[in-house]
Length: 128
Image 1 (cartoon, rainbow, N blue to C red):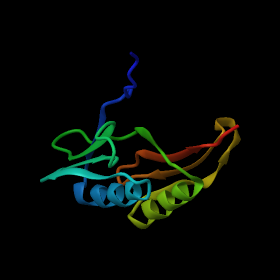
Image 2: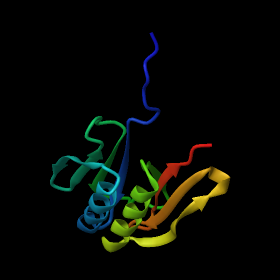
Image 3: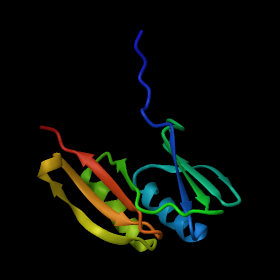
């Protein structure tokens, strides 16, 4: 019997300003149907309501801050990509690329920088 597992279990992002990053990720990911599944002082872990993995663990940096990473989240529709972009920018993110079709990827995507400059993307794969 074949089982389907995710290639990634979870990712960790260590934020220089946890509160600003938590506002950003909570707003941006909510637009994609991803919510906070676990919260403690200086930690917020995000996952889909149906599955707790893969997940994104946001943590207050005690040392090195996560920078230079690119994380792409799946969106169920173009409207979800648009909502992600609007929510992310409203919550303090900086637009890298407004939502648009990327023919090379056969996808509709938007890219936003989180408060530490990480490249956060919402992507909706187009069919055929």
